[in-house]
Length: 192
Image (cartoon, rainbow, N blue to C red; front, side):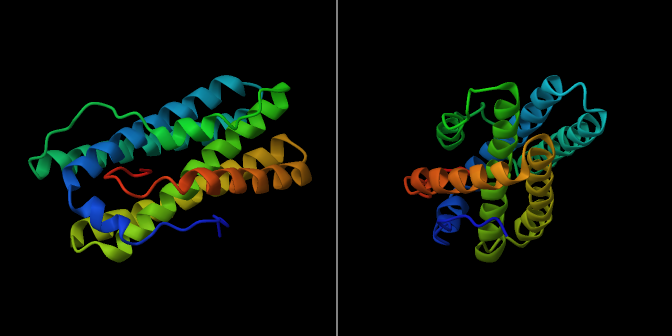
């Protein structure tokens, strides 16, 4: 569905499961950052009330996910740590075109779509490979949500830009992401 060029090695789930407290804290902060990103996009698109409405719903859903992960952390007696730097996301951000307003907005939508696509793929890996039954169910539900967010962001990009150019640019994003994801998959973080 996402056409990601390099799938996550299923052994990453073993690394994640080896320190569930850490992966949950990192995941919680990823959800917070996703909500913040959706709010940032809202500020760029006030002339599109339908998109603003959908972005607001995404921001609220991401905050709900943050809350769900935070509740799991508390329930399991883990310590909720400070926000983590997300090197993967920071490397993706370097690929955003700083051209015209339209180019920038389209690329920010594709940036968001890429993060949602990889997150969804990572949640699928967790669902299929961890032993923790509660987290298997939890990550399967989130996987579906992230897939919907991916589809929404791609749809926004196609609505706001020329669909053919957007499709071409998405292929460029897929190639770029494949180049950087090779360095990841060895840490207890959602994208690490």
